[in-house]
Image 1 (cartoon, rainbow, N blue to C red):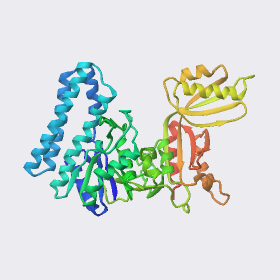
Image 2: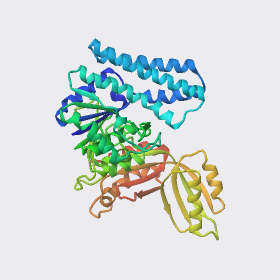
Image 3: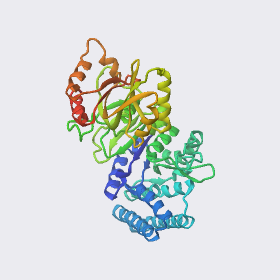
Image 4: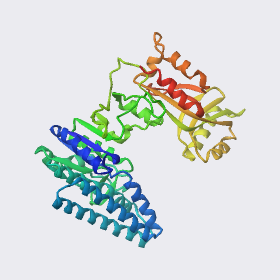
Length: 453
């Protein structure tokens, strides 16, 4: 049994949904559970609807919901050929849009949108797209059933950032999903949404469809979770920066996490944490190029082929350099620095220290001047706009420092022209971090990428 999650671009229109149906049909023998997001852009429209309701712009609300209604009707009309089935789906779309109108009117009248109301509001995208997609499977001649995710994904009552109650989810998945899967039906369900013990709608937070897929996969002990999107897996670099970038066939969850933390647009392990904990492999695939093998994320990868697997960069960083003032104890100064960074919610990416000096790379922020002002009593501070280039790979640091290897000298030679401020190793030995001027980051990525074999 596999879980196949399709993102917003994969269900953005009838052509994309037809592609999804074909992809799933080819894998019917693996007993697929299909988890689908809202059509691309719809969740953003729903977020905007809240603002329109709070500001009592009824005409704009009506126009926005009318556009949603027409878009989903058009997708249905283009995807489903049978008139009777088309009429039924049109009716379901209208019911959902009418419910959405009533909810917006309530928010408008109260001039308030509670977390519970916001969760319901955000649920409409997935509910609309899955009405159409599940009917599309039936129209194409497949035995398919739509199971409301809210009947299975039991959560707590933190309505907008809900946490799954895995024991309940496992029991409910066996009750609502397994009977259909056992008889060979394609099961469609929504990502992102769930419900608490009172049956009230909750959502998992933006990007929650990946998490939904992982939760269902963990509950059903899936052999694999597939994340279908509009890119062919994890690349050796951003193709827009390094045109010769290629797909990485296999990568550990830890490597993917390191790349995501340092700027790569890849699946972050936290979004599929239940799968990681159950050691269920996750494959990232391209809906529009299904022939590509994509990237398989697993707990561990082959350690015999060591070296750089991928390189990414995080722009918009600031290098803060501190020189502790005389008579100020080092530990007292460090405490003041980190308490201040916490106070202003400044994200720290890397740090280095010496006897009376300390440097930190942090995220750019409008309050950095206030941070520096708060710290100036214990340390002088200078700041420089920088980027972090991250070269990641399994046991990369161990490999780089092995005496008979040449990786570290090669990296040093590659970045020599760019005036790097520092080269550090990550705490998990998965990456080398190069801090350098932001203007040089693209060229540095290309230079390091050329070392990937």
